Length: 233
Image (cartoon, rainbow, N blue to C red):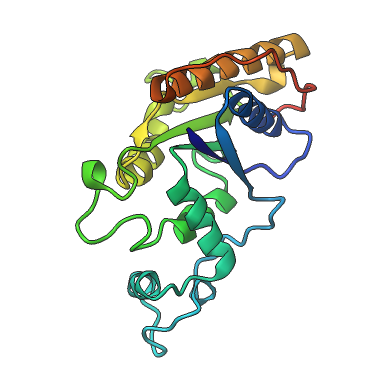
């Protein structure tokens, strides 16, 4: 299995980074190939505009989808952006690792989607959902949330369970482009956990990842791996 692990967190000592490192180590130890996109470390530009393109379909007016379609037909995407598109086309499993900010993705990850999931590279030509560009691939959302689980219920503070909050991402982006959606891995209230509890989270995450790999590749085991505990969030 080929896995692309995308990390969207600015802090090097964050628990999101520890989870990202766990995913990479766990999958590689199980015999899978892993590539990464650490968006903050890459200083990935989330702004989608003419800088996406080497080609120009219409110099007078920017129609983003028309420019994407033209660039897709003429190998006209900016090289760093094309490299991300190539990773996405290569992978069998996409992992998005991020903290939930204002009930959504960090802006840098939303910008990565805006730029990388382009017409002709991720959708278009009547291809969506089961016939999408990424049919046959799987996607996993691995998300940390500051609040307690009780707040994310129909009668909780936010009035919605987490899968409902993630629906615009899981369905509107990933399912739409053809990905099969794995059960998300959700971590609540990291700031209230001690190191032992965080180690338990990483162990559960490891098992979750290996269950995905076994379903798609025939299985495998991995030696115990324990990165140092990172800060909350």
